[in-house]
Amino acid sequence: MTNLLALALGWHDAGRKVALATVVDTWGSAPRPTGSHLVIDADGAMEGSVSGGCVEGAVVAEAQDALGEGASRLLEYGVSDDDAFAVGLACGGRIRVLVDTIGGSLPVDLLRDLVAMRAAKTPVSYVVDLEGASREIGQVADDPARFRSDRSGIAEDGRTFTRIYNPPLRLIVVGAVHIAQHLVPMAQACGFDTVVIDPRGAFGSAARFPDQDIDDAWPDDAIAALAPDARTAVVTLTHDPKLDDPAIIAALDSPAFYIGSLGSTRTHAKRAARLDRDLTRLHAPVGLDIGSKTPAEIAVSIMAQIIAQLRRPSDAA
Image (cartoon, rainbow, N blue to C red; front, side, top):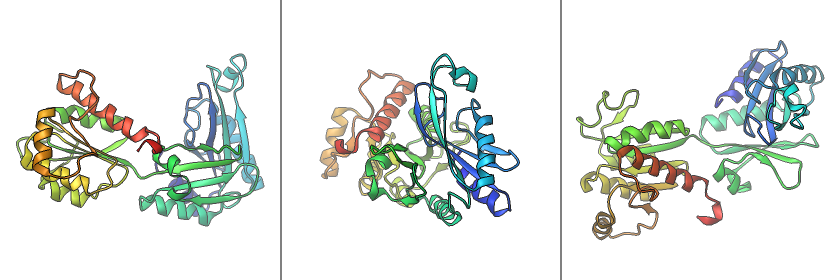
């Protein structure tokens, strides 16, 4: 789903007539979230999804008609439990779908700029007047709360739709330990790109972390090279000050939205005295207090705390 804008542009540049369908609003049990895309060409080829297959056929037909006109369409499907099943929304959900035509209602140059900014990992939004012809690119400063929460949707005016495109979420784990073996796949399932750092070869083996590259540089050098941004979480798990301390310092010097470190309250007190700097951004002991005991349970508590930090309202920062 992350490359659908680039796909739409590629289809257009290849000479195909292309439409971009986007979920702009949902109610009830709609199966795809706001912002989901479906790319359609004039022959009915499609990639992506706006409803998990429920109403795609109807959207494709509408998109083909829209391509003949070069105009946009705002569609609505599913109203009640009694008739929603007819269009595939079996639990009574509703969705509204905007169909834009590339080179028509959605200017090609604007789409090209969106694709380029996404490739550069620049936070950007697509801002649409649902009752008019306006299509614009937005920046973080325009609506920081939406960017922070990844919240695409319609504004209070009822007509301005904003589709948020953020860089990928990342989790940097320092220490290829047992907890990390559980934390890494959990983070990946939650949509995070993962990086594991450990200069100790015995820990960062392919057998322990299949399909996960291990960065064997010293933690502070590795973190500096990775350049954590506001979409990055950093967790140190080695329980060894020689490795954890440099990583914590490097993370604190970055805009990472979450920094956590393994260790007891007593361990953290010693760390604070040793580092002699402001550690208010550091979550230590790491993870939510859910009574975790096993490595897997600790990983759950860490992932839950990371998500809570990511999704909290911006005015609670």
